[in-house]
Image (spheres, rainbow, N blue to C red):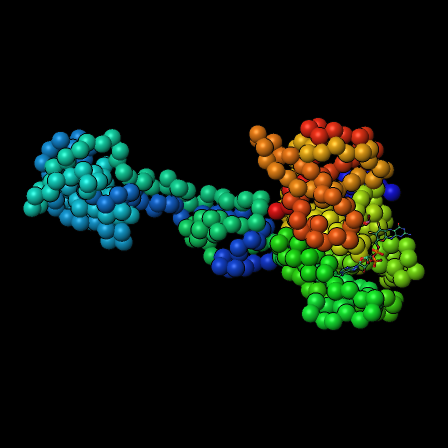
Length: 391
Ligand SMILES: Nc1nc2c(c(=O)[nH]1)N[C@H]1C(S)=C(S)[C@@H](COP(=O)(O)OP(=O)(O)OC[C@H]3O[C@@H](n4cnc5c(N)ncnc54)[C@H](O)[C@@H]3O)O[C@H]1N2
Ligand code: MOO
């Protein structure tokens, strides 16, 4: 069995080149730029008033000044700015070149068409031309675009973007025991829950997801599901990855020509994970146990979807301290469902009472995963450990 780190490297190698498309800025929330954006103008495009008040000359701030015009946002003032004058000005208006300060109206006494400053301030209240960005500046954040990024790109006057195409993920649940949520299970049946979780993790990671109907435990039914997934960049099967007579994923994918990257990892839960390439698509065969499937999706599918969009890998493992004594660890790297509380600037991570990989209520109540290396010796509460927080 290979290690988790080795497995992750092999999974990332399945990503292939980033596929791109051009979209409207209005559709770009959460998308990843494939090419830098370049500002098409300078912002602010002129020296702009930052306050409502009067444009004056710094050298004349002790004098009585005559108000000779008005400038508002979108309505610049043009005229002859003689000495001893001021312009009534509003926030966002261009400050005429002759003036170099905006006195806030709260600091000004007005009498007819003259003003005097009642309060002196060193603040010019002018946003200099290009103070935000200048024409040609490049913007290329290595993360999904945020609402704040969209505002910046809009201000740069860029309306079309080249982004990574959303990876197309096909989720293939399978098993004779499964029925969709809302259906009454027959004898020996349970409700399929993993597909929704896996699809949701993929969607949050930027993918466009198609969840296929539950396949039966026959080679024919599985082959039919794979055929329906032919447009996918990533095919994710759930269940049937282990060694039982009805665990058919390994056999069917092999028969369909999958180039296997690995099968089985020294990891708990998640040992029977399968990974490889089927034609142009990457393939992950997640174990069926719900916790195993979800932990594998967090640890392998998420990074793979990030790589498919050209995103850098994010290190999610952090340092914390153990909240309870632990016995020695076995031969697989263990991801224990845990509560996390923050105390004295430290994350105190305590494993939950049961680590059975079928328990969804336990997983749902967990704040994250305590990561224990294979062969880790017995540990005492208070010792340093590593963990991953759920987001
Ligand atoms: N003899 C051995 N048996 C098992 C081994 C082993 O090494 N030797 N490994 C165990 C481990 S570890 C895991 S994990 C499971 C994984 O098995 P499969 O991937 O083949 O999964 P299934 O057998 O199809 O299902 C396991 C379990 O999960 C439930 N399941 C499956 N799909 C869903 C779904 N969409 N929603 C909810 N629950 C699902 C399924 O009903 C089973 O209860 O194998 C161990 N066995
Ligand atoms: O590895 Mo299985 O995934 O322990 O339940």
